[in-house]
Length: 410
Image 1 (cartoon, rainbow, N blue to C red):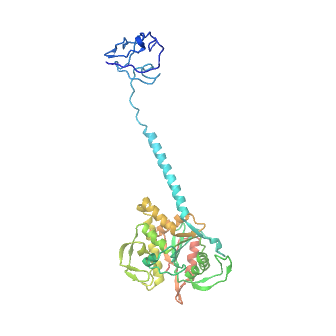
Image 2: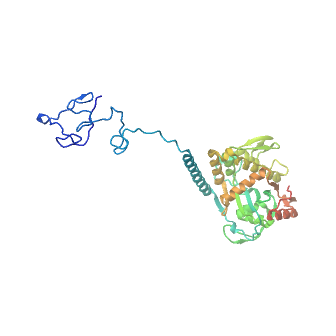
Image 3: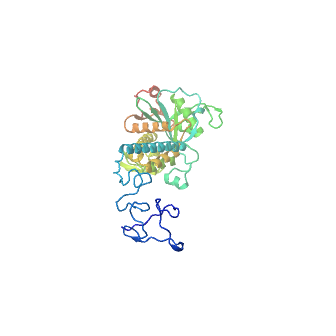
């Protein structure tokens, strides 16, 4: 076999690579170049392991390793590498699980802070005076306002909202969350109530009572804190948290979730809200949903029927949002949560956990695990609805003690 000598460290004149006597250099100082022949060199170097011979190891099939290790010059000279060890699946599974759990924790924490930063905690319930004592369970006041903030002229036309200035309450509900069943109670906006003495939300000064009025007038006069004060005064029920959503926000949530399926019992139209519905099961987009919950001119018992429709739709919305197709799909979950949180105005003490508890309670009510009702009505005066005082007292006592509600509403 033809061999070529590998380069190595310089050696002193007259010595071979391994300490032997090297032949004298040729005349004229020009080193003699080796000529390749089978088995050795023409200048006398051979493949033998003599004083100055060179053994490549290729003829014997040896494989070179690192110096001092296996291979020529090492303890395992000529040894070949053994088979690769089997993979440690237990170790791989463990580290894969650790990686997935870490990613889940990081994502969950990031999502929490992202969602928490979107809440508008603008309502200070500490400004409400003469409050009743808190009972068992948690009471949420859920308000739908006719706020048109952030809406363009095109949006107002599309959603049939009109262009009225200021804000009024289109819907008001008390959601009681407790251990003996959750209860959703609608408060008709035309309810005849007394607006009591209150502290001004801006001035901080005590203002005199305003006497008998429609319930939604309280919000129009001085916003959320006067509304809470009026409801607590007329019911004796302590309100723990406040949640409000406007027209545009409501429509955006419905569109973000991809529409809400529900069954409409009877067909109806209303030029004021833009409603035009046939009876039967159908999917409502944001524009249609807003028309559905706002319509009252199409019904004889206008305000009471509207509150029933609002309860029905909100329960269907909560059920739709909680489906796996929404919760487990990040391309639907984050837009839906973002649209919802961007649209909500809550009290300063509201946490995401409180909001989640409210949401799941509403879903439970829609699934038959709770009760939904209107505030009991005994009649009307001057076009305003009068509450049934005896039934209201029983209802409030049951809610305060977190007992199963036995009272029926209209």
